[in-house]
Length: 140
Ligand code: TYD
Image 1: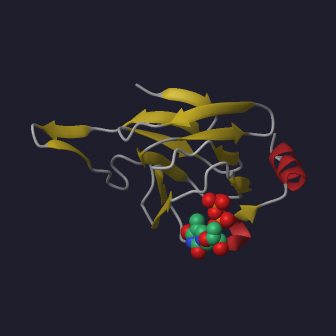
Image 2: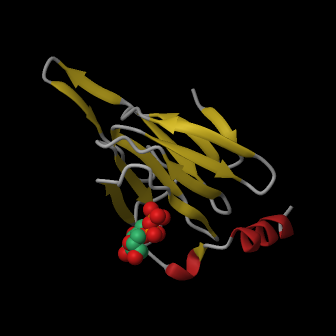
């Protein structure tokens, strides 16, 4: 079962292996994800009231999971905007290229983990919204 939000963006259920000791989620690149994992990063200790993100990527594909706490993700493909609350360690949000994203309303305990298909490359970022609209619109 998937929950499509925008083209390239969907909520995907993760398989939880649980027993009476607790829960475990394993994510394998190319099996649970449609890409090989080149990078993992996580955002935590976010100052209350701060927004993060505010960028898009030319090529990067990512899966974001709130492994603790929660935050709100705004997603924008240049045509539509949707907001989704990430607060379930058993669900991931896939984000394809050319999606503008903004994160807000972080809970104090939020740990947002992101799996990405490429290493960090500032040249892949689009940090200006008007530039994003121009690039996203040129492909539509
Ligand atoms: P930034 O892109 O501003 O974070 P966010 O999109 O969550 O607001 O990244 C913060 C800093 O960390 C910035 O100096 C770039 C650096 N960074 C890396 O070195 N590697 C990474 O994989 C990421 C995501 C960021």
